[in-house]
Structures are given as C-alpha cells and as structure tokens.
Amino acid sequence: ALVSMRELLDHAAANTYGIPAFNVNNLEQVQAVMAAADEVGAPVILQASAGARKYAGEPFIKHLIQAAIEMYPHIPLVMHQDHGQSPDVCQGAINLGFSSVMMDGSLEADGKTIASYDYNVDVTKKVVDMAHKLGVTVEGELGCLGSLETMKGDKEDGHGTDATMTREQLLTDPEQAADFVKKTQLDALAIAIGTSHGAYKFTRKPTGDILAIERIAEIHRRLPNTHLVMHGSSSVPQELLAQINQYGGKMKETYGVPVEEIQKAIKFGVRKINIDTDIRLAMTGAVRKFLTENPDKFDAREWLKPAREAAKQICKQRYIEFGCEGQA
Ligand code: G3H
Ligand code: 13P
Ligand code: NA
Ligand code: ZN
Image (tube, rainbow, N blue to C red; front, side, top):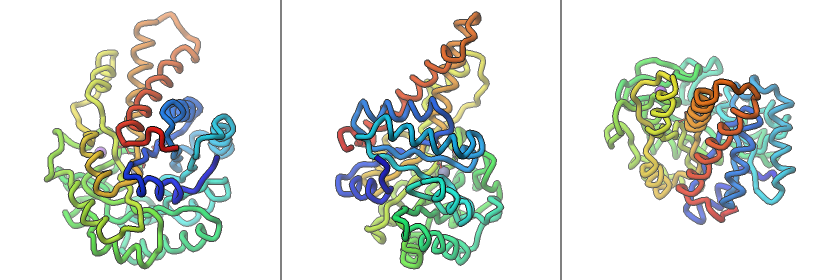
C-alpha cells in the first residue's frame, strides 16, 4: 500500500535501521526492487528523478509504481520525487500521486547556481505548506553535495554544479541545519558530508578527511524529529567494476561509500539512503556479460532477465545490510 515517507522513516528511527531509496526509471528496475523487498520483508521507497519522469513518460512512471502496489499490496511503499528543482516540479509529482517529494533548494531552479540560504528556506517552506495539507512528506537539502578531494561540486549526472567550493559549503553546518528545520518544518533533510552522485566519488577508499560520517551525529543531535538522508550513497562494488571491464567496458578506478560507513551513518541517525549508481553498475555488468557470452541471442527478455536479477541481488543485499529485514 502507498504510505507517506514520514510513516516509514518514523518507524526506521524508532527501530534504528535505514531504508535504501532506490531510483527507478523502467519496468525491470521496479520489478527488481519489489522482488528484493518481498523476499526479505522490507519497506520500499521508490524514487523518480525529473530525468526518470522524462525517460519513461509521466503516465508510465505513475502506473509502473501503481502496478507495484497492486502486485505487492502487503508491502508499504513510498513514491518519492527525487531532487525536485522547484515547487512546480514538486506540485507536478503530487498531482501524479507521489506520497513524498524532495524540494532540492541547495541549487537554484536552473540546477546549477548555488542557492542562497534564504532562497532555500523560502522554496522549501513553500513546498512544505502545500504538501503537508495533503499528507505528503517533504525532504529538503542543505549544503552542496561534492567532493572533499577536489573541492568541486557534483555535476556528473548532468545536474548540479562543478564550481569550486569551500569546505564549509561542502559540509552541512549543524547549527544552520537546526535553523533550517525550524523555519521550514520539513520531514527529512539531505545533508552534505562528502558524498557525491555517480560512480566517481572517491579516488581511494574514503577516510574521515573526505567522508565526514561523524558530522551526522552532530547534526542529528540538534534535530531529533527530522530524519536525515544521505545522497550519493552507492558503494560502487569493485567486483561490478571488474565485471563491466572484463566484458568490454572501460570504467576508470573509483571508490564509493563503503557499506560499513553507511552502517555507522545509520547508527548516527541517517534513515534514508539514496542508491542509483549501484543498480546501474549491476545491470550493465550483467548485460555486458550475457551478450558477450551469448552473441547469437537477440530476444530483449533474455538479456533484461540477468540485468533484473543483478539489480534484485544488490537491492536485497542493501536491505539486509541496512537492517530492513522483517521491518515491513
Ligand atoms: O540525482 C541523481 C540520481 O542518481 C538520478 O539521476 O537524474 O540521471 O535520473 P538522473
Ligand atoms: P548514487 O549516484 O550514489 O547512487 O546516488 C543516488 C542519489 O543520491 C539519488 O538522489
Ligand atoms: Na562524482
Ligand atoms: Zn541525490
């Protein structure tokens, strides 16, 4: 059944676990997440970016998620707008039936210009006022996602800025976070702690200087009633990179957020963990392998099946690692 994100995150907080929020764009990804959740008894957050809405087409995204609810009525499911760039985008998602929206006011509506604090408060509050009347949960973002190695913002997936930033801009300030929550009354807050979107997050296995996990506890202490969200939380498994490269891919050396760091983050108060890249890597590795080993095959179902299976495996693994087993 469709539920609000507030409901799921409140339960996760009360029972000290974290819920992976998986990005979905097509049928096989939705099926993979649902099958994984069903096998382990996990609650589900399916999130669609503006790019997903555009790729699939709005009626398709809406009805793919409706189909998931129909097929798995016993699983509590949140339909979430990922990185809404304006109140209009969030309103559009609510009109489509989403039960949760992210108003990402860390950047202006062009998706490139670093927004002022006042702008962020203003647009976020606007969305909260409109969404809460309808029982829809709101996530906001404070601080700019980007790399503490290069001091650059995160532009890899086509939105965001690659501007050079200060450490202050790349790390959410706990005092400002408390003020932001007080002024906007939002339900969930995405924080910047050194993670970034995409496969190229770190040039080495991250240590405390480039991944500020401890800061989560400092932020959480000041806002016990607002749930923390970690974006850019794919772990970028080395074996998936190796598989892609073994079967003709050309990915460079790179590191993601280690699962044990995410587990620490959950102890410190993170409740929603955004994952897109790991599913992309898993599906790409599986398709490359299948088509290399079966050059005579051409039925799309035959290569989509291993891709869907690989996506399911990574989702299942994250559900278990983040403590979701049996929580639904
Ligand atoms: O925000 C980043 C998510 O990975 C979604 O990516 O905008 O390419 O769909 P996307
Ligand atoms: P990854 O690119 O690390 O999977 O992050 C996805 C994300 O944060 C979507 O909002
Ligand atoms: Na990156
Ligand atoms: Zn994100």
